[in-house]
Length: 364
Image (cartoon, rainbow, N blue to C red; front, side, top):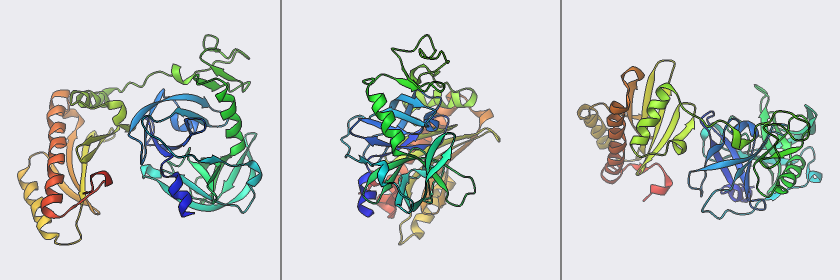
């Protein structure tokens, strides 16, 4: 199974939207698109994707399907990804070992193993594969894979407090939908929730299904997300600092900024009015830690408005500000300082105090 997990590392993709903390998708080279769940991307025209060999980027939603909880996204740019195969319905039997692959809780690429316990779980007129490979928030839209490396399902939902009872949409539904969509030759579309026909930009009738008259909204017609209040202010100051806010969005009131070798997570907590900026710089060395601790304590005494802390092995530089004190002008000054200092300090901590780069791409 190790080879299978390695094969999927490059094609399993992390998805983020302004409305959710994340989900999973997987790339199919045969169709040159990304498959995920509809509920992962609901309410968006575009989503942010990221992966091991994929540069973080914005992609369009090409197709949505509430009936089967499926969505298709355009392929990532400037990358050549490996081929993975869709399995056959006939190979799905109870007791079949399976692997669920995804990005639960925003973690980068995890896999869990289990077996098919029910190959024909019925819910809302659909069959689902019931299995005990652990699924968690963020796994939605990821592939369910056999030990031979074929995809037999799309991980879709769990039973809350169900002790690893997960459900995946079987491969036959995905195959049929892919074939129907391919006939449109790349047009943006959706499945009508009433008559179940596929409707596209060139066939929709003034917002209604041309077959049955049901009101339908295609992905390209979804209202563009616009932040309000403090979130709007945060995004305005990020724009002023030269950052692409659409790429930075990582969930409700959450943004991620790359500055040199440091990654900065910005969060707004409406309940208490607190805005935090946490720059994850590097990780503690295993040896000779005392000089590093002493250095961090001295810097906490000297630097104004920022604080060093250690969480587990991570060394973090943080900014805290209450929303009532934030405007674009003050925010630009405060966050620019955090960004610049984060990129400055992680080099010192690694090169002079033996800390380790947190992210592989900066590992020297």
